Length: 207
Image (cartoon, rainbow, N blue to C red; front, side, top):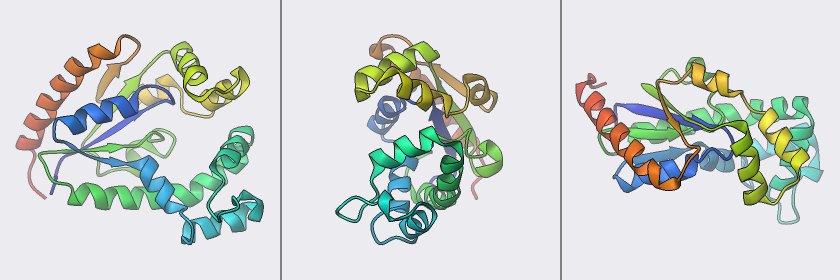
């Protein structure tokens, strides 16, 4: 059971997945908010039932699952829709992550929370001991989104604009990795933070 929890966050296309993989390769458990969000609205769940009640049955795909691509376009075009969806999903994600972190083995655990700043920051996640922000310039995010998702410039701009700003994310950071260069540089950054977190975890009082 891990008593020291590090929240990892960053904007879309900042490289969060690559960095969490590197922590995992060092033997660190990762609780993933994206997976928790999928479970929160899985077919047959109370979360999906609330989404259907809020948005109508046309949010469902033919197989009864949430039509995620359609929902993504909808919430990025309509801030009110995004707020309604987040009110359904975020509380379930927070609860699932806290349980997963409490049960995780190892000296510390990473809670990967892309929407940490948007979801209330430290106030919403008071059980985080430290927050790591993966920071990139907006131009880099934009270029990566176009290359990764095959979307147009307008949707890329709206996806970035719908999230917290760099300043808002950095305001809640204890640690920062600037991921605007070669992927090979990430190993040294992650290794240094791993050493720091192991040391801090060893000094933290058990709960």
